[in-house]
Amino acid sequence: MRSDWMRLSLSCFVSACLCVALVAAGGCRDGRPTLVKVSGRVLIDNKPLTTGVVRVVPANAAPASGEIGPDGTFTLSTFRPGDGCVPGEHPVAVVAIKTLSSSAIQYFVPKKYVDHTTSGKTVNITGPTKDLEIKLSWEGGAPFIERSNTSVGDIDPGSL
Image 1 (tube, rainbow, N blue to C red):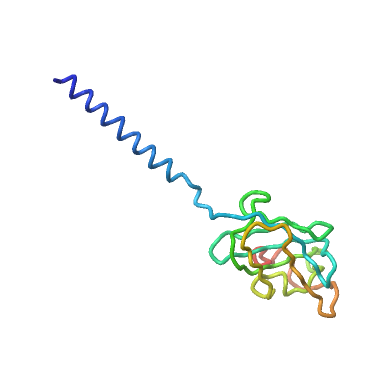
Image 2 (cartoon, one colour):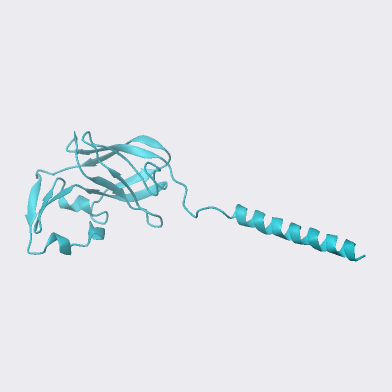
């Protein structure tokens, strides 16, 4: 009788362990949202932008970014290189600046595009795409250098 009880206890213990393992394994998602692969190009006044970073900023998910190549092309990454962006309509920033000194920055795009809250640009990601175009305009302007009394080291990079 004692042997039957031990077998039953061992059987219950093993079953309980298996249940816990299955529940734990079933919940082993990394909590990351579904991403779709996105690549494209940035044009400024219908010519490829040759430097900078595209930043797509979803409201409730991690931002995606992609370095702009010399031909204006980019591939978005969120968690790993080239993994893409969450689907949806999202504001965009195009950061194309060069630090010249502690108080001088050269802009290769109008300043408004550097911040997703002022760029006026959005992208609508509905699925994987290789031909997303982000069109910018100087609206009669040209690349410029901004000088200030504030050291570039004092600027919060998260604000760019």
